[in-house]
Amino acid sequence: MVDEQDRGGGKTHVFYKKTKYEFETNEVAGSVLYERFGIPTGNKLFLEVEGHGEPDKYIPNDATIIHLKNGQHYYDLPPGTVG
Image 1: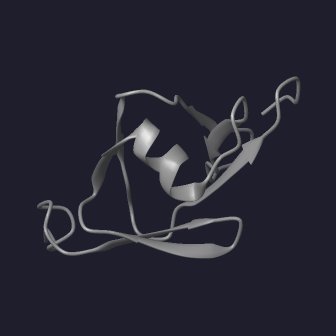
Image 2: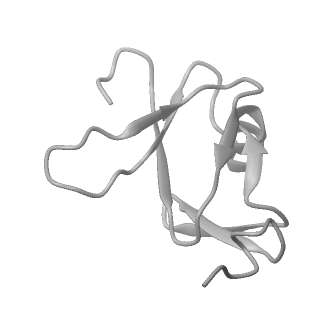
């Protein structure tokens, strides 16, 4: 069964530093996330990936389209810190 969010409709809720953010769509550019979350210049944004041994996913600060899913958690790290 496909829900409204999977079809691109409805609102999508994600978390950055334990704060809930709402998006009108489930697809945004990486640069939109950086701006919306207020990521400091030079920091890198990551999506927490569930699963044992799976590395977290780097989100570039550009026009790359990011597919959001309800409940995802994001965090940022300063330059020189391993993600």
